Length: 276
Image 1 (cartoon, rainbow, N blue to C red):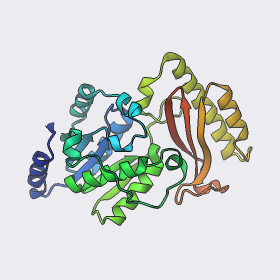
Image 2: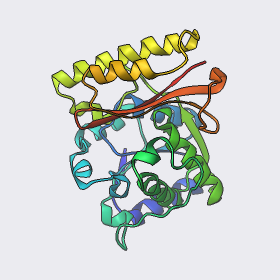
Image 3: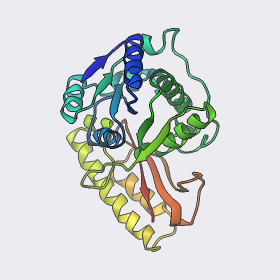
């Protein structure tokens, strides 16, 4: 696996790849890779001759410096996993390579805003859209792959591609889940033993209520909120049922998901679950 840290060196290599006519699949990550990330790599390998993975912890999408500094970093482990799975190239830039003129974030996308995570993390998706746009312009992949755990993010990136006329196909891939039914997340590696017990209980509770919703045995989430707060969930940002196409609140579950964002200690958990 080739590893590039400089944008200029990466661009030269990409030119040689494209000169051979190979399609390029891109998976953008912030590292601390788990099976969810690796599933995106595998999907990219199925549909592209050359696969690039980036590892870059983007400072402009964090709401506070402590969260940015404490984000898990396991680059040696990441490199081992990428080599083992047969990824062709790792892009591993420094902040100054991505933002040579200083940190910047732009409001590129206006749709799917002021709801869900955007409501509670102002500016987060501006940082996401800005860095994704930068990487798309640098790499110009044929296809790019994103996990459904960050469902609102996928919607915003799909809008970004339309707005900035990127000739890139965005593929959203199902979440890889643990045995409790919760999506895998890099942040989960920070759980203490006690927090892991709370997380496992959370998964069981969510699974129970998903089944009740699918069977139309409950029509609101009030009791679920009460039970979660009683079981050491620190804070709930949102617990909402929304249409997966337009992200509007709905009572029609045929194309709906339950969206959650909550805290165990200071670790934020987000996830979504199909109700059909």
